[in-house]
Image 1 (cartoon, rainbow, N blue to C red):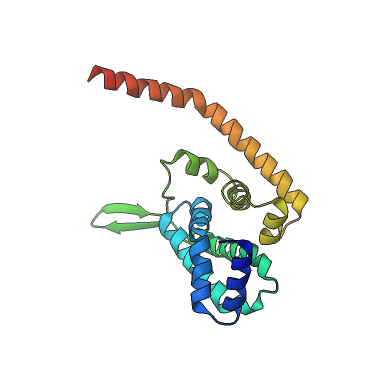
Image 2: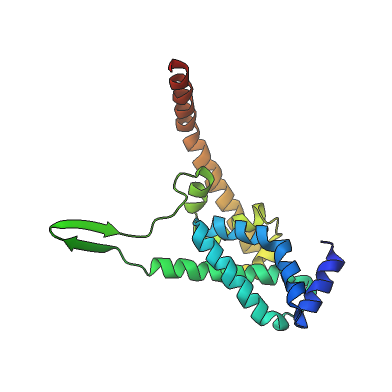
Length: 192
């Protein structure tokens, strides 16, 4: 969808066109879901956050002042929805259940433990994860990220630099272990 078509759709959505809003959602759906998934590390939570954000955007679209700011505005709503999801999860407590002498512990655990990139991103703070995700996956500029997250552009740039440096160091420290594991898998395959 071209920029002029996006502006037209935003304008129509502001005037109550559900069809125009649907086109906007279709245009950004993959980006929204990808952002939420990397932010939250859980597919179900990401879907919930996107749904919450889209519903909120539809309800509040008339408050949008500039049509060209729609994408940043929408991602700001999504970032807030993701933060809400994290707050809900952090308010969960570890529960011990005892029944007939047997005990079980129930707690929330991230879904992407086995995903290398997800695991690396999970090591970052939620705000740094949002900055990296928006910069790398969403191709947002520092000014856009700053407006979405309510920070200064310089802060976004420095946090992005530090987060990418930390991720690079983490990858470099894990590289020998990953190479050894890969070699071991190849050797096992050759023996079979």
